[in-house]
Structure formats: structure tokens, C-alpha cells
View (cartoon, rainbow, N blue to C red):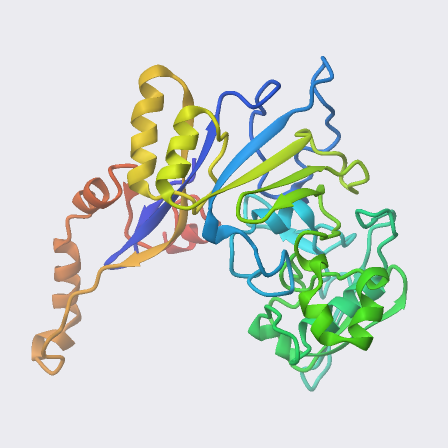
Length: 379
């Protein structure tokens, strides 16, 4: 289990939680729900032996609903990623060990394989090869031109798109053929070969290109971004009653194989008490990371473990810093590193863990979890 760390000098971690119950609606429970479609976990599965579809019910706060758009438009890049990862796919993704893996791409571009080329003046060309047989949810084949179009839409200053700052380093993109995408960079960028779902998303030209060329305001307001979304992911949109729930169903044509869970229903709640009540009543099977805080987690943990009803999995979501206030920054002792080290050593880190995070993790002295490969560099 990933521990939540109290770390980095005077810091502690903000904890969120994932909950997996021991039963799902209308069928045996899945052992786990993959949070990384790129890993291929969950592919190739079918319904239960009795033919009853397997359904997973997910509970989220209402503020997590992507009312402006699944990807590209509005809040897509800042909200919970579950919607996007269920319904769409990117060129690359990170696996559970934090290693960059190809997703729609056949491989991750690198200097070694020649797909990442850097000119003497710092400009870069990164070439992507697409997997064969990738199709949009409506059956239309994906082409590299869909990624070129997606970048054009995402970088359009007239549209309220969600764009990361690094996208300004891209000068252009082109598609020499249907399976080849070349992105041209103005200057070096260390993550130029990491093109995740929210970084360089594809947008279906066959649905949106004509509208975009003729009416940008209609493009912004088009239901494609929300209730009529067509993507490339393991699930496709079934029904979305905005403000209440979203239902998605397994994509039989998903390029990594059909998901083992046939249907996912996302229910939206006005406050955290509704999510907790849904979990305790059995109306909700999973509350994803960010849905609940440590106080709610410990409530569920205590009740579940008392009767063996389910499992709690704490997960790290960020770092909380605790810093001493130097009211007189000019004082001689403030400039003495030994004094600052002594103050840091005086912190009762175990008490912080026990009090603020209910003993759900262990104390640490760095911002890195102990199972992070980078942590070994500190030893």
C-alpha cells in the first residue's frame, strides 16, 4: 500500500482515500479497479459466467463533475481524472511505478530510438507512431491528423481551453501519414516525449472540424465536449444526467482489450456526508482519490474492519507544509543552520501523523515516499 508521508523538513502530506468494497452490483466484485488504462489491466474481460453484466458504482462530490468538458474544453485538466481516463486515451501514460509507457503510441520517443531529435539551436522534433486499429467510439479510425487538430483547438486563444504552459513551447505539428505525428518544439523541453491524456489530446475531426472552421462559439457550446462525448478510451458514454449521475459502458473496440467491468455509474453528491452514507449503505462501491478526507476514511475504516465489510486504501495526494515563523529574520540564530536543524528535530512527527492523519501513515523526513525510486538517491 502506498503510504502517505509526513515529510520534507516541516511538512506533512494531505491524505485522500480510495475505497473498494467486497461486492458490486449484479455480479461478483472486481479484485481492483485499474486507474491506469495504459497498463492494459482489465483488458480482455467479459461479463460474469451467468451473463449478468458487472457494474461498478462510483461516488464523487458534485464539484468533481466535468460540466465544461471531458477533455480540452473548460475544467477538464484540473478536475478528477477518472472521467477522462475512462472515456479517452492519450499517446503515453505512467504505470503504477511511475514509468512512462506508450498508450496509443507504439513506443515512447527517445534520443536512442531516433524519434526525439534535438537541433544545435535547441529546437526539437518528436515523432510519434500510432498503434494500428485504434478507433473512436463511433467506429471511425483514429489518424494522426486528429492529434494535429486537437493541438490546434487546444492552442486557439479564442477558445476557453485547458492548456498547460508547456504547450506554448510547441511551434507546430503535422501528420506526414495517418499513423505518424510530428510535433515541432521551439526549444528544449525535458518532458517532450510525455504526451498524456490532458497534454496532447486527440479531437475527432470527423465530428468537430467543420464546425470549428465555421463557428467557434458553436464549437465552445457543442455537447460533444460533455453529454455527446466520443473518445478513444476503454468506456464510452451511455447516459449523463448532469448534476446526478453519469453512466459509461465497456468499449468492445478498445485497442487494449475490452474492460472486465461492463458498466461504471458515477453518482454525484452535494456534500461529503452523502458520499460516506452511500458507501456505508452499499449504494456506492468506490470513492476515488480526492472524494473523501482522512476523517471520513477513518470512520469507514473503523466500521468496515469491525465486521469485515470492506477495505480502505489511503493514497497520497499532496504535501502539507509546517514552517516555523521567523518573526525577526535578521536575528543571528535564524541564519545559523544548526538552529534550524534543531528546531526541525524538535517536531514530534509521530504526533502529527497520529493527530492530523489519524495514524494512517508513518512519519518521514523527506517529501518522497520511501517506495519512490528517487528516495534511494538520498541514502
